[in-house]
Image 1 (spheres, rainbow over the protein chains, first blue to last red):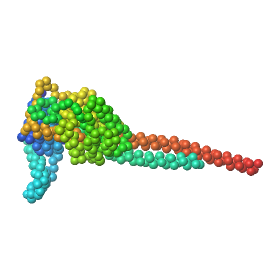
Image 2: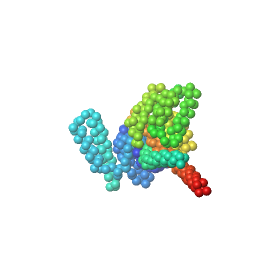
Image 3: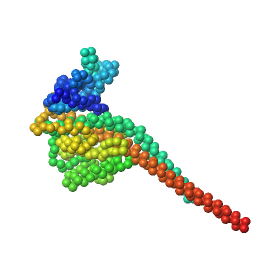
Image 4: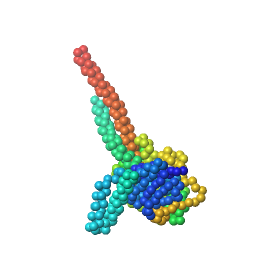
Length: 140
Length: 307
């Protein structure tokens, strides 16, 4: 068996399902590459990129804002809080969100807004890095 | 003409009723699209989530979460999702009948039952029949929000974690298509109950496809690798699972509500139209009879005078 079934769903939609050669995701403890017959694994996902590599070597990138990753020997399930195809990320909007978050952080409002801003900043940075990686892949 | 006038008033009142029912039908017809869209988008997540927790139920982690173990059942909790408003055919009563059947079965076994009502109709119904109503939330509106559901979820979760209840069921109407809504009762926690149900469903139910991946075939006991650790990951997954299932149930029920109301109101409008047709016929007959009678009276009178 050279492929593993992969399902990526978010609360808003079914994002991807199909047989793939490898799934790459950012887990809480670091980056994970999951090939067929991987050991069962359960982890939370950090905001960032989930990439699936098809049998033909074609890569598809998705951005998730956190979620859960479950691995069974023949199926990988990504339960994303929110997921976007990487080409749907609006770079300008991401930059704006990042700047806004940095501004709030700089001004140091009340504790709660700082927390929110940090969250926002992490998300924006993750989206940006997902974008950059996608671009890099496109050039190859 | 007294009879004819009465009939005319009746026709008018039926016509007014028809106006109301067809208006309701159109409101639901316009809302159902959005409700269906909401339900469709959330369905894959809920289904996959259920599958994942069923897998977890079959694992043998070192960390023991209460929800992972089946325990002796002394008290169960039903979370019943209903509509806020009526006029949607037998939608709510079908669900309540099903829940009541289950409740009786439990009571005969000496198991206590408590109810959490989501939606006005369930709240009214279960208050009336005097079961243990431990939580209520109503008026979720056309776009249910998670914040409103958090309270009742906490009641059920706390009850389970503190050992006051040993099993939680989630009851709602599942949307199959516009004509069909299915009243379902599903186990929510503990997870072994969910896994057992999923396995049963996969053999008999067309609503849950891909049965081959629902089951994990392994004779020996196994466990996940957890990153970073078992406890926070399992806790996180279970929280998410609970939220997703309850939230999704409200969406299923919302889509069912609009579909059922649309169909019920269409039937009512059609019946009203039929009633108006029959009444009009009766009215015309009465009118004709009155005219005939009048003419014959005039003719009779004229003959008497002229004779």
